[in-house]
Picture 1 (cartoon, rainbow, N blue to C red):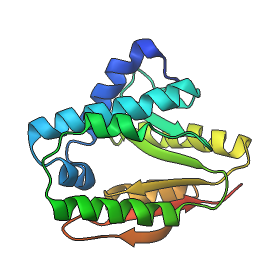
Picture 2 (cartoon, helix red, strand yellow):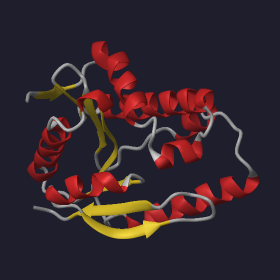
Picture 3 (cartoon, one colour):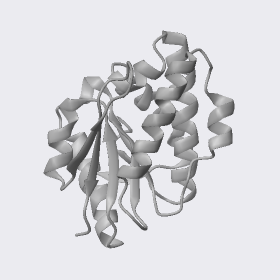
Picture 4 (cartoon, rainbow, N blue to C red):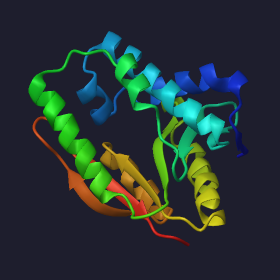
Length: 191
């Protein structure tokens, strides 16, 4: 399976893949339970993450774009103001407080110092089980290793944890606040 850098011309296809890949994800749907809210929020969030990854040559696709990964290197952040403008309100004050607490715990779980963050990796559900996710993980981990840096990710889908463990990620925390689903924080040491 050929993994390549994602280009701007394939961005719409990549966003479509992300929308399909996360449509049943417990975390994505907790944040955006309605269909229209999910489509709006996830599309906007994925585009913001993709923009940061594209600007730093760390957005990848496998094959025809049925699998994508957006990685953020040391010092690369998604524009929080843009995210705030994109995301549709509709959650309660307690949900907002829970999201803030999850963000704080996420920050505390990250490796100290420079590291990679993998906020989005997804495969079109009709293509899952064909090795696309593993091909993407191999490519992104090769990038992490080439730069001799640790990496961090979170998964709200326990089904994905064994794949990440196969590539050297270790569970460092299972975060859950209020009505949120468990969010599994995973770190990969330098190799």
